[in-house]
Image 1 (cartoon, one colour):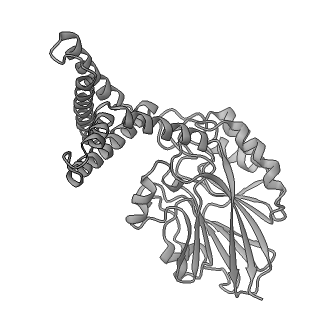
Image 2 (cartoon, rainbow, N blue to C red):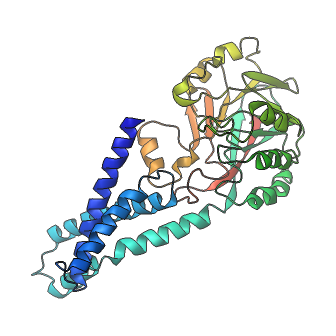
Length: 372
């Protein structure tokens, strides 16, 4: 924890120093005297303000500062490249205009404002994403709905989920799977009970099934608003079946298994997929619901046909999702590991910040069909 605070403080000082430089450059453009005491006071105040704002890692102010910093640096890099490619002597008038636009300091501010406004609107829009899955196993046709990461009553209006229930019911799904992080540390007991009552109104042929996420049991706070038992009672009391290292056989040709959450660094002590499926007939179609999109190789080795996950939010804040993909993380969409297919949802909402600048909020409809 001490190491994290040191890193956070050092990063805050770096950001404060950069924005002080940014302000000096901008003030110079607008003709303000840098040597004046009042101007020096403003620059010093900005430095201290940025350092202070960045101490709240999950605060909206930190997100704004970080966006502005990244965009400002990108604009600086672009300007340096522009100057190296186009000489002032070759295009004097155009060069001077571009230089003034750069020096005025408005470009990063405008881009940041537009990006965050878009991200705020995008967080309120939930779309339907569909996938077609085919198999040569002797299984009937099924329609599944996957809902993950609602983080209820935190950063998204609760009416967004409530209004989507009727739309999802119109899909007439055979199964509904709740993929974890339905609630979190900032969810009150009242809101926790409310969301499972709302989700209990989903209609399906073979029921609603739930797996725990890493946030549902509020492990990252010392001041929980509900107990594990109260959470379990709210889920089960609304007709939702909890699958935690257990499975359910559906209609004699499909197995739906739910993993206990892997927690941080996969140190949960949960059963392995081999142990979980020890008594399962591998000729049946096997679905494993696991909040975190991990252990794809293990699933494939054990004959799992489909893994359903969430957790990543598809990065949520650009370019985190791109970085995740480059590092090999199953970030968003449909993947293939041997004979096992993996679907990772971006989630019904985001986490931490009320902004989504990468991908979209969604619920997922999956069609499983036997090859004719």
